[in-house]
Amino acid sequence: MNNDAAIIEGIYDIAFPEVPTSLHRWGRVVWLQDIEVGSKGKLLSLEEGVSISTNLSRITNIIKTLDQLEVHTQNSIYKLRLLPRELRTKL
Image (cartoon, rainbow, N blue to C red; front, side, top):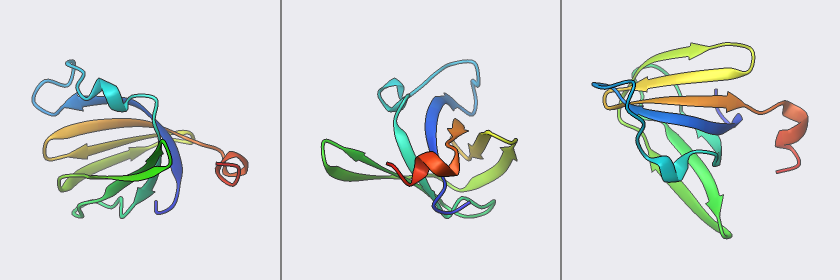
């Protein structure tokens, strides 16, 4: 799942999955890098023309459907909506 693009729909604490965290990141378009179980992936984004890299803690589980991705790390759960390929080239 490298270079896929997604929108962050939610970030939750792994210990309290019903409690939202990092609300300032919700809705952000990100590019996925090194999203594999056992790795420490990254979410790359642009904010006001500046590249931002969010380093994830070690990934413990990935749940993927046709258009959604849930990434479980040692600390958080990231809920992402995958963008269709035709939209990715326009970003």
